[in-house]
Length: 189
Image (cartoon, rainbow, N blue to C red):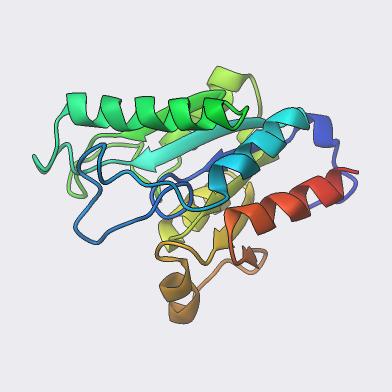
């Protein structure tokens, strides 16, 4: 992606959740019933897994701080994600979320890079080796903060994000997660 000669065995993928793996809503995804995978997204993760690429999720979940859903609801959504991913033959190597609201002074809410750094530590990888895939500018800004490769997908809020402009100069843009994974795997060959 960013550096074609980079040792791909060290690369890993960090995905945003809502709008990349599952359908998004301006009213938030608040329950397991509302957590609906985007067609082809889970199969794309499984393809990365089979290719030996570590995959993690970094997601802002301010709905917790706002009282829109409970920790139990969030745990149920993530359990569903893992179960449906397993049905596709895939898995997540890490899943980290920020439970804070936009006015909280945390270091983990994207566009800050706390989640990406935490995932890097968990996977024993340098965050600069990450390919960060999201549908919002804050996902790409978090990638830029740690000098990771930013990738925008047009699902979720991605088309709106692209239309608003201000993308990092080295951001790559794909229609779907499956398209981004195709490109990642082609470059790994």
